[in-house]
Length: 462
Ligand code: NAD
Ligand code: UGA
Image 1 (cartoon, rainbow, N blue to C red):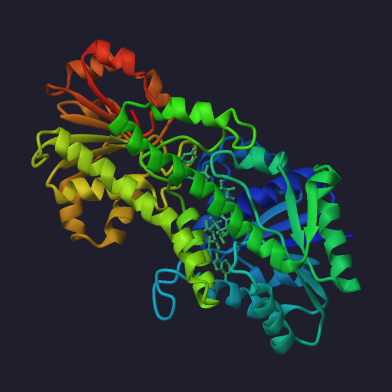
Image 2 (image 1 turned 30 degrees about the horizontal axis):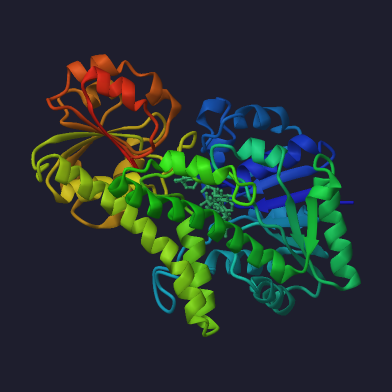
């Protein structure tokens, strides 16, 4: 039985996942390690408002176990050494250099972890891939462990994570399924059982699937590709709805009631964001191409092409509607995170929309309930479109939505934060330049009410 777990990587996946394992398995000691000292200090902060990531319900879960059987540390070596099972939950971003640049997954952090585990281990270990990885990565990890280790035995399991940000705690506590891939050898099967037994502390056995390693690795990329494909599909239809007088919400409802299609993930939007959909599909496209499967690659790449188009279509529509110029006009952008209930803004559509409008010389003012000002500038600077000084000039961050909207020509809803719905829209309208426009990139607000107030309201897909 596993008594001691180490997780390398205290990010959006490692932190919440281990916090829930520790909560549900008080008999297991869980140590989450990271090289990032600031991040670990934040996980250890007495004030639970300062945890490094915002997720509803997470602070309670952490406070229940932290210091009891949940620990956060920068001492990676000793956590590896004392663990029976090591989860690798480090980032696997898109490569931004060399072969496969802009497509392939950058596995340098994974390799570093494997080498460190091999170097430090003084006993047999089970290594669990929690990060999202290209199919057959376990082969590379095994080779590193066997060739650079101290002669101990390692079993590699694939256990991809399916949590979505904003609902991470709920997804972890009540997962649709848990997937564990392992080798067919007796040692592989024994390792699978050990990991299954951990989850079985709170997940019913019929929801825990076991497969071979390659199926498990590929299922994760496939799940994200299918989810993103649904968003691109409904977004593609949103433009056709705008042209034809159909309403994308009505179409989504009508098709979603077909149990074969299902109603989830059919919300038209300004485009999907987040650290994973784009990265994982690009990775899938790269893998397909590397096997010479060009039609397969092109098919999936279209999901990304559609998403990029949807983001730029949103910006272009704003410029066109505001009489073909936003130069010098104040535009209030509400919401910077890639979805509600998270402070994560990686690949958020807001970044691209703001950037497009700044190219048109708009004066953009951003308000987000959770994303910090430094993060907003860092996202924008990362694009490299203009200098940091120019970014500071062209875009301001406001801590008050009232100030952000005052004297604006238009308001953009880019994230579906619930709190936006409860704003005093009449008061906001009174303080705006006229005509006052709202471009609702999430179909979040009530069109009828806003039009009654006097707004010109533009939704996606109607
Ligand atoms: P993240 O960037 O938030 O966290 C990764 C952490 O790993 C960072 O804090 C980094 O400092 C640390 N790290 C990197 N190399 C290290 C090393 N050698 N030693 C110690 N620490 C190291 O990333 P994330 O969002 O948690 O994603 C992690 C993985 O999980 C990715 O493969 C991602 O695709 C996958 N995933 C993410 C989500 C999500 O919602 N974010 C969901 C499912 C799967
Ligand atoms: C997604 C998957 O849902 C998770 O299962 C997966 O574990 C995770 O990626 C990952 O591998 O990182 P996440 O990106 O956190 O989770 O959030 P989603 O709820 O999937 O939303 C992704 C993006 O799609 C957001 O920008 C969201 O606003 C957008 N979206 C989603 C829509 O525009 N319309 C929809 O109907 C659904």
